[in-house]
Image 1: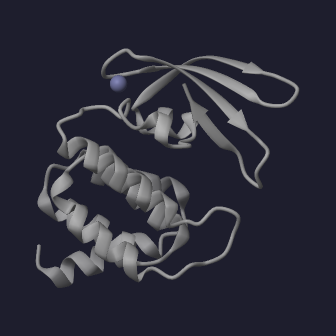
Image 2 (image 1 turned 135 degrees about the horizontal axis):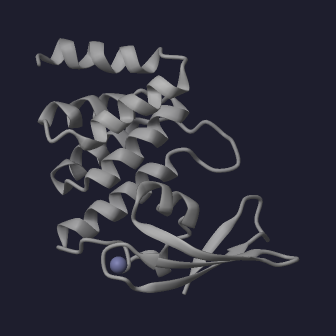
Image 3 (image 1 turned 90 degrees about the vertical axis):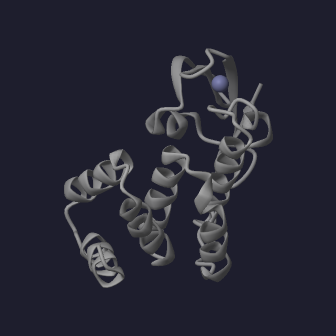
Length: 170
Ligand SMILES: [Zn+2]
């Protein structure tokens, strides 16, 4: 696929307004072993579209190919801030953190969870962990999780003292 075709494909995804079709495109990109799938994801990441930046970052983390860390960092540097409670570019920082782990040879994220505030539901959606129990308290929710790769168990406590929920992994 020539670079013009990669840009064209990314543009096609960017203008889709059927969420089902958008999900399907990201599903295909996540399963593809084709180098073009990375180029398309990088285009989507560079688009600056809040939804697509987050989706592309999620899929790049899932694919786990650390050879793209430099490209991703470059794109991150040029994305404008957009306001909102949570900076959409934080998704890219999370992806870089995960790819750095893969570079070290770690197949799961258990080495970094205690340093992050990753949402357990998100981690489950991506397929890194499974939530095995959820206790809803008056002030927060506590999730019991297990890593799909190494079986390590985690207690994840929601902290609602900020403007948006933070998660502490123990
Ligand atoms: Zn693990």
